[in-house]
Image (cartoon, rainbow, N blue to C red; front, side):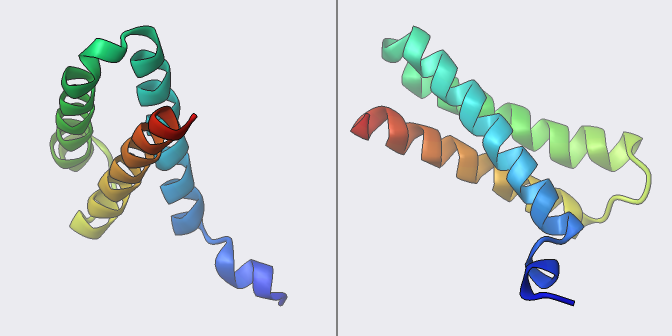
Length: 89
């Protein structure tokens, strides 16, 4: 087993998927409407919270609170990265 097998786990892949999905959505929407950044970020955070802590909790099988929290953290990470990229690019 290589060191890469220890890092690239299903949890790591799920976190990355949520991060880069949120990044692409927030980066694109803020590029289209830069003056709406606060509303876009607020909407993204609320949508991520509802999706993870209501929809996934009730409609996905085998979801624990830790799974939902990790996925929500991935969304928040993507939102922050998109804001940083918009600011510095």
